[in-house]
Image (cartoon, rainbow, N blue to C red; front, side, top):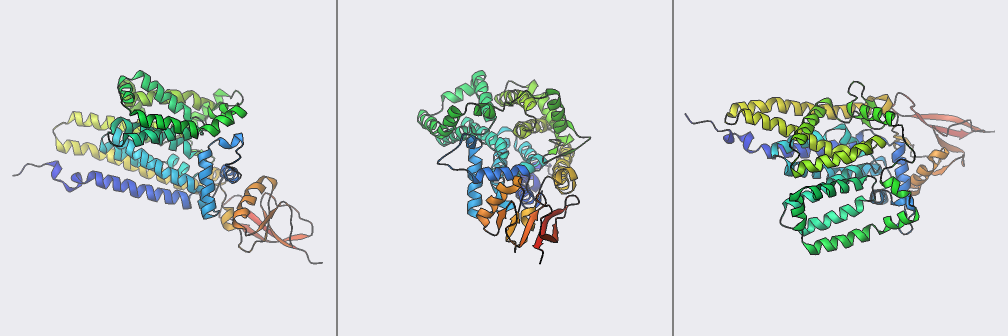
Length: 475
């Protein structure tokens, strides 16, 4: 009888191809669902982001315009090219989320064993946190995108011999553009600390080619010139970029908020962002990862994670609403936890193929549960949770096509003027300017000389009366 070899199994030989194919399918499906169907509307923050992008004048930047400038340029370009709709407002975030997901997959593949990389990638791209920021039409996606870009390019410089000059220039460009996003400087500080402390990283830095490094430095200086000018004009802008609040916050309230965002498993919820940050199973894996990182902190990877988290902890206490910036380090800790479990099991049964396969079954069940529960929680939460759904509006999709005059409140005026500037379908005003007009819910009042002809509603259970169609009373 021939001896059984696990490597003869078809599923074993093609396991990574199957795994990364599942990741690709999951990513595409997740972004389609998040971008087109859930939450199915836009929040007030997204409206404000669109207005800022629309008012952007690259030839005459105000100091406040430089905050998250790359994102607003991309959003302005998407709307200019494809028109105004809920999807195009979210399109910049979807694009950046796609590249962020690819970067996360490549980082995990480089940092960990392929099996761990596949499992951790599946969990990461199906979490409610990732799916939310992937469709959120605000600059919050940049907290993840720049983290991924900087870490991926730094990793490639450390490991790749070919085309190293290209990665060096790419890293310099990413460093310069990331400085326009608040808190990004702390990741650079964490990298700097790790380079100073770890001898292997100092060795890698010394071997970087000089010419691309000089060219990269010149690019950095050129790209951050508008930012430097803005900081000279408005020094207080530096506090915003550093994430410093304008007044001393209530630290106890912030700690309570952080506790709910990361450990509120008994009372999930949220407003626009669903809490808790990760599911209970994922947080347990992260806890194992934290233990392993502390235990084996001598490696360069663990140095990066530890210094990064240490830099972020005081910032999160001051700004508990910026949890998106912790996504990547938490994913790395989750992958470390998975790697610890697999390594421990393999050490118990180094030569028994049946035991090795048997040990993977409960781990696969755990990952499958995390993937489906994360996606299900996102879908159901943004579809049925009243505290969350009410913060998103799909009004743009239900405005009648024959509308000629849209009456809005003062708080809505800037957004709808932007919409009509691009669509040119109707006139926007704060008061009626025609015999028949459509009034938003916020602007609805007793208009003298007019009567309500029709009420246009949404599918929401609460606040479903979205527009009122008025017609002039015949004399």
